[in-house]
Length: 146
Image (cartoon, rainbow, N blue to C red):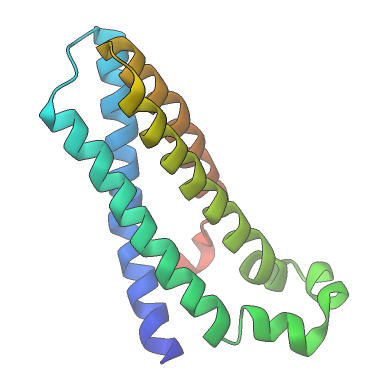
């Protein structure tokens, strides 16, 4: 089961990264070009929200069933995990930072809906989605991704 979830989590991540990039650049372009916020912009930001939430659910399940997540901490202890950079990445840093990224996307999406003007909507999305994108890029296990 863990192998199948790992496969899904790894390949879904490509879609997540692509959509977060698209949503971030769309929000930045909309803000700087001062265009009107439309249905396409809403769908892009919503799709980013949906795919990231699906990814975090898959990741949380994987965290509890895979030998690299909670089992690694249980077997080695937190002190040993924190001393091993690879174990720390998979058991602590990656899950924590990715959850934070999804929280930023969720907050940005929720806050943008309350804005009345297009510039406010794009600005809110641009800020929160950019922070999320930086967080995601900082903790992707690049060595195993390619």
